[in-house]
Length: 237
Length: 380
Image (cartoon, rainbow over all chains, first blue to last red; front, side, top):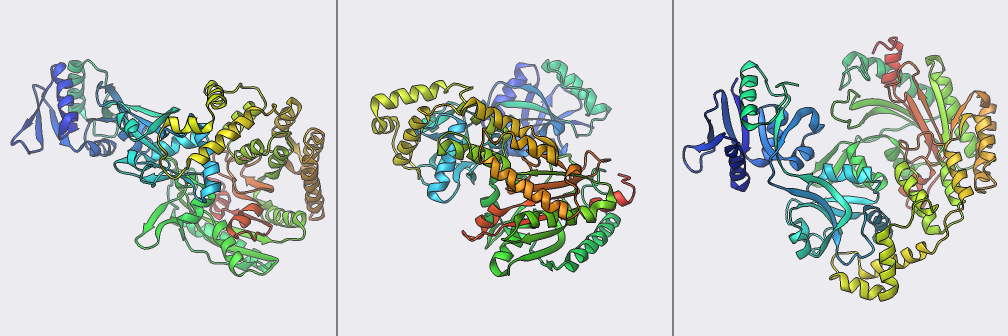
């Protein structure tokens, strides 16, 4: 079957993905009208380009409906259960850098580490009668991180945007969010904990282990890998 | 087919056999005077989250009701049964129940997400040792034909040892809070015992605190935002300064605590080993007394202490709301199975749910689906 490559359907991630492939001699292009989500891969037989919402690429990879896909490691690890059984990292692409970090208000001078945050959570709960709230949209990654570090007496407050504003707005005491330069955090008087780096993420080319890897798809994969100069395994498994 | 055989949800024939065994056990418990109780499957998530914390989300199924908010599929019967008792129970009280519980599993796990539990709970104030012995002896008798291996422990031991440390109440509280998280407990013990030095950032913070005072330090760092107030930060700064002035926990006490965590063996030998640590950790004396009374009560119920294995940390990471006697029964031929039966004392849980008015309680559950699988010769 035709090898399907999923790439973000718009924006800077798409431009940078196209540029990364172009730099390695693989020209991706949109086809049709400006707003039409279809594309092609020039000069590579047996492969097609699928333009998808960046947030949907992990799901399509996990289901094996695309063979390859470009998306952030943060989204893959957050949204695919047992992600390394479902996808394989083929190549980090060197853009879309973002760190998922744990941050607290600047003026919390008594809190510099995750252990401090845990101690504060206990005192906060005793004083306020509810668990210290950490605003995030990365529930799985943050909960796993905090459990592994032995943090108790917290709760996650779902925040799908403007997470840095939740502390000032009184809906959370601390946040876990992605940052690239830290500027938004500083502007909102928040500071990253010294050991508060949960995940370093960047745009990455993934291979779907559960996609249908028949002879044609495998052949297209090895042709593409050779051009890109990456090792993408043996198709299935 | 049942546990561990690739069967994610219960297969019909196994469900039927398990239910029949569960009903037989329910009838046995009821014949002993336990009142059968029905518990809802759909529980308000808030109560469970409050008791167990965010981690429960990784183990229980969460759903939501448009009006009532977050709900959970019952991960066990303890909470609804305790709540029912607190509302309308007489004392002493014995309850029994049978029904499915729901547990999320790791991706790829073949353990069932839905399985039956049949349970027996005893709420009794006057003689905890006799109550412990009653429940354990009953489970022991019911499970005797199955060739299971019993394990026992006491979740109150570590708490007693922590209470006996010569250190500040704050340090004891920090250790007590993390008894269930061995790695975090270890880090705290290493620091409070003086084995790991004060982290450098903490030392420099305390130096700046001494120079500038808390107010300047806090206001100089940024505007006060959010619900945690500047005075809470100041209070913790003071607590940190006090903590830094604390002498380390005496090495002999740390060693005794570590020795305690290693105690395992036949119950009488384990008890002697605990008794040897009383000098270093005096509250162990009362804890050992409770174990001794329990062993005597068990002997009166026909359980020979010499044949009863005891492990000081039994169930430490998995049975977090237990705070006294704990026990489990496992199938020796199936090391990959979860325990067939577990139980323990949970006095503190009843206090947490009873708005101050708790009652000593002990109970246990059996998984009849696993008994059914054993009956089929364990042909997993």
